[in-house]
Amino acid sequence: MRGGRLRHQVSVEQKSDTYLSTGEPTQSWTTFITSARAEIRQTGGTETRRGDQTEASTACRVAMRYADASEITAGMRVKTGTRTLDIVSAADPDGRGERIELACQEVG
Image (cartoon, rainbow, N blue to C red; front, side):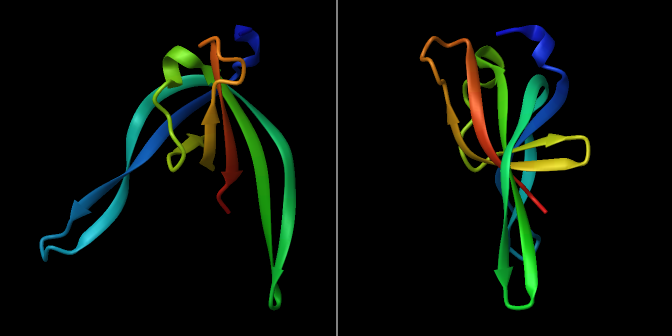
């Protein structure tokens, strides 16, 4: 994997269950990977109309070194700057353990 393409600084977060003092469960995000280098490429986008509103959705691919991201799963999210990307799937595309590609949806 070419290091020059990894120009984005990202962090990865996972959901964690916490409980309020009343015993009520609530979900929050905790940091899974504090800092890693990644390549983010926009792969497309769609617009969906619901009633009178239009919702935009952007699809992205995030590529990272496998050693940094081997335990990432769907349901986690990637944060970079002001962008938040929900991870839809994570795969090692060539099966060689060099890189992992994350299919993501940008959160509005």
